[in-house]
Length: 500
View (cartoon, rainbow, N blue to C red):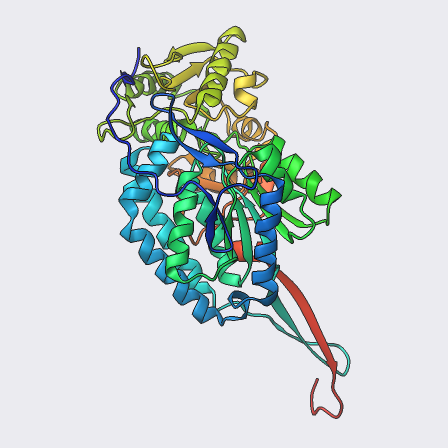
């Protein structure tokens, strides 16, 4: 049983690419080396354009600009209200260019254009506005000292921040990091993923138009092992925020420790469980589990890749899940009839296919999919495995593709044990009509977010981050501000006060 595949039918969409150079201190520059690299259209494997390839000398320039803007510039010295006004203008400009930016992310990353227009890019503007509203509400505390002292705390911007962002949600992740850092008064250097650099450069253009001062936002495109490594190890960067693989997260922490012990926040891999109990509405549960893994072609850190179904409804669930895949359309992300675009690049495409092969060799049963889709591009059929055991690689390792592992369970205790039997702890889903089951299981699963009878219920006011090897620190919500703030205590003696 296979999904509908339109992978060979590519729409002729190739907009003018306006920005391909590094953005440092308010200007677009070639890399100092003069090098460029190709960014690829995953629909075809063809080159979209060439982009400046930044390296350590370019990172040095960008950090110098950010340091000057922080130490001597206007941004951290503005009132929070003034920063918020400029951020609001930035959000307005994004809304004026939604279609063009969504086109860049679809072209660069294979993301659905319809979702970009309706969700991703408007969500970026909303995130900016949320933190713009927070910019003048960052307060310290008045402390109650035990002796004759008056004391209070200040929450100060941490300084120059390095943001290293992934390729699966290039716009969303850009503003996960940039928005709260801007609100508190930090300056920054952003290293976007080499697979999807185009929208980050476009945002620099809009930031300049909005009135964000030169040096506050700098973007250096390039590769992780060069530009990213230089940013993580830079002695004049005060904090680094990274979203990506656990393997690279280790390298970021190592670089921070070996340099200036800069503050680090990490949002890393996941192997998120979805637990479906006997009392669930099966049709709703199938639709939820399907979205949880196949949204964005499985290239999402919280993908519900391990689906545990209680034995009473397991057989019905398997049958309906297979039928749902049959109706799933894979093809050009600019086609509004398509549900799933191509994997981001050849490397990721081949990685997913390797895991599908490993799953079959380990003894799992291939229920649906499992094959490339179309004659060109990086399309893969939505894939479901049954008869999956906990020690199989497909049940333990992050695949980051459209691959679901279906596993049967008997009791609540077994479900909790299985859900926690992974090194990751990013997200989890629970499907049940029993409030006691929902409460017990949600408190027992070690993950940063638990969705009950829903999935992907992200919101700008809801903090997001991981447990265990899924990282630490939170994006979104007011908690995200903490990553970019230092707490300073100020104490003065008082004499003759009528009260203490």
